[in-house]
Image (cartoon, rainbow, N blue to C red; front, side):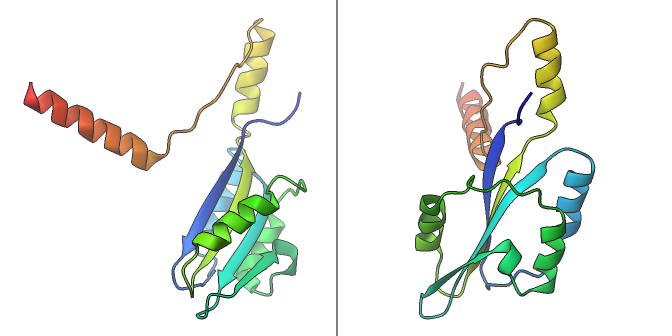
Length: 145
């Protein structure tokens, strides 16, 4: 019936190092069918601020080769504009990975909704930081009453 919701996540590495330490959790999420990684772009800025964009299949790091193994590539989901915006925001000496993934866990729910005669009209993502801020503001407001 098609893809589930797609999300782009940008992960920053202040010291410019992709060491593979998040790979086990990504493998777990892919292995359990929670997500499917469909595109990855890597960016680094040297100490002088010169940026390098690296497609995953071109990455020399061994840790990144392991990441390539769990990616189901669908070209074109991360735009050049997304990459340019990310690179502009990177401080010198930093690196970032742009991961584009499908929320595969939604697909069976969407299919069940469709089977029941319903339609999944929309999905929204509220970043955890924003949710924490809203809950703190609500708690503060309740404390003032």
